[in-house]
Image 1 (cartoon, rainbow, N blue to C red):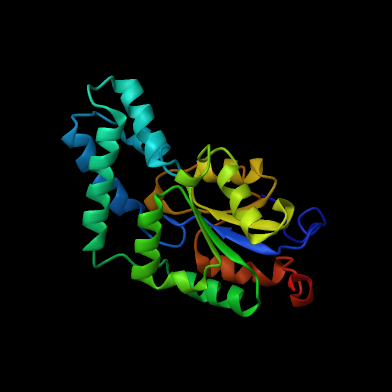
Image 2: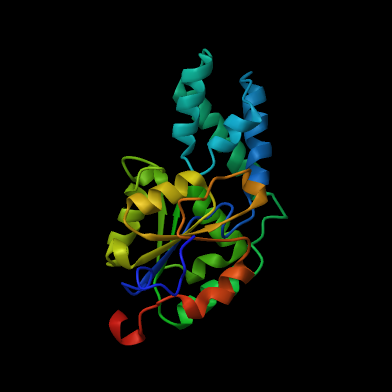
Length: 237
């Protein structure tokens, strides 16, 4: 991990923060794993736990494309995607335990107070992002929301983060990404952004070694805030 006090980390001010959603702002990965398992069972797909964890951070379309290609099951991609998305929306709409990560709202509130633009850049479909942000109340802190389905290539390609930065009007080198998956970290670094990996046991054994720094909670991240080179307010106007 890099020393956050080194000049290379502080070479450019941080003018925007881009968060992944699932497993970062929301502790939803265990819920998704259960829903995905039920979809795998429905279509008779023997997905190993190792393969399952490798899909963290990718779009649903990419996940199912890989599964269909590997297991050669006799279903069309559109068919399994429709079933799975309906399954996810139905279950999460009625889910009562979908909450923000501890201390996540404090971070978002602080960034808003400091006038640091914030985006969610998630591989989840847009309706799911809107549902979760509404249910948790975190949506009021966001300036931009981007779904992996709205770019040509999902994570680990950098497209989603570059698109979010463009919408915010901030150069990639001035963005900080918070990610919990190997695919997300690769995407952030490929976009030329600084990245902090959030080690979340609920997201499986993710290799976050490419991140510039790693933390295990928002409480640890909060302790770093004075070491991070956030831009002064005057540079954001």
